[in-house]
Amino acid sequence: MKKIYERYIKKSVEEDLKSTMVFIGGPRQAGKTTFALNFLPEPSEKHPAYLNWDDLGARSSLLKGELPANQNCIILDEIHKFARWRNLVKGFYDTNRSEISFIITGSARLDYYSKGGDSLHGRYHYYRLHPFSQ
Image (cartoon, rainbow, N blue to C red):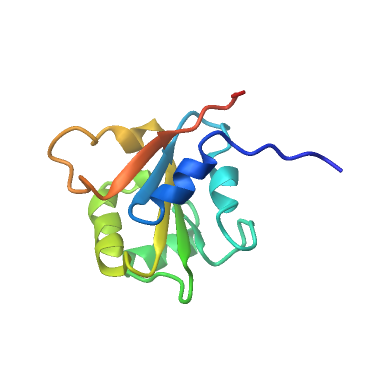
């Protein structure tokens, strides 16, 4: 049986999800999506709580303001490709934060707005996932 190693930020992310959104950025193929999926009860890209902006069905639902029902944690993958993603995510978080945890994954561009003027200020913690770690 293959041994799975826990990523170095897992415990910190678990703790932050109790009070804020978690943004996970980093280079391509670093394992951001795989890492995020492990916070779902059944880690799979087919899970209803996993919404990838590149999927037209998921994109349509998100633009209508629809989130999957009865989910404690929702993953928004590649949402930064939408020009107004910050306002969209802010609305989801502000109206659901007592019931739903949010993990946002994507490129390093997620952190471009962490300095001043950020409509999400105080609502998230940003982590950079590196492809190799000890």
